[in-house]
Image (cartoon, rainbow, N blue to C red; front, top):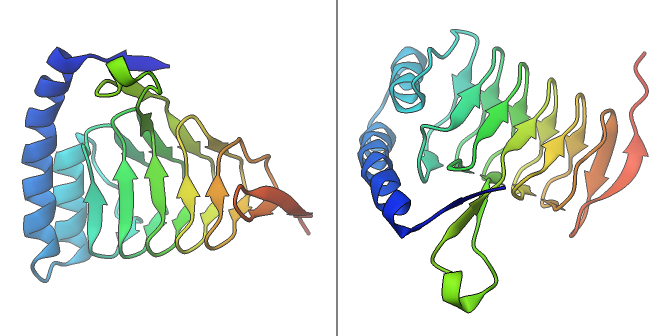
Length: 176
């Protein structure tokens, strides 16, 4: 787990505000997939593959620590709190209004304005259902499915379906 102090947060805030301006401009107009990928690429500092489809609006608190693989689909209203790092591996599906969070605050009231960062990995071919929430430090395994509305507090094994609050395994996926 990484921590950021108040001085580091001020530097991070500069990037976050710039990237939020770019997202606000993008979200407030009609844009082609090519334009969306270009803006998201500018924010993340990576070239977004032509196979990626992103529906607007898209939100992020930072943007620069988001990595997007090939064949990814991000539905409308998704929120990425990516300061701690979020990776969407190839062929990930993210349902509408899903939230992926890689940052938390210490419980200690004296340090509450600091942040604790834990990266999140959504592995290949995973599917995050509508309104699901993925918390800091979680890995969602290859081919796993997170049901709509689930709150994921722990790693999700590959080839499983999780549901509920907190999310629990409800099914194993058998490949045919």
